[in-house]
Image (cartoon, rainbow, N blue to C red):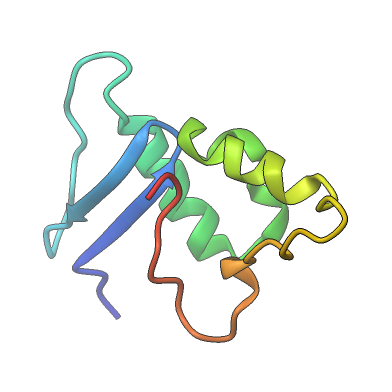
Length: 97
């Protein structure tokens, strides 16, 4: 099996990134704080299959306000919050949109 590419959305400082991989070897080159380690750790967490590899700080900070709102109980008479990440179908919307 060969992984040709992968996409990261709202992972650390990466808002929406597609990473294409070569068939033999891929090397990440870039300036400090450009996402090389994040891109590598994301794919490692995915292929290792461990659910405890992610924390709140792995999500883009643009998502934090939405997460905070989900943690607060709705006021009396207010509508229940929409929980898009509990749906059985793929999530279409991104944080902050």
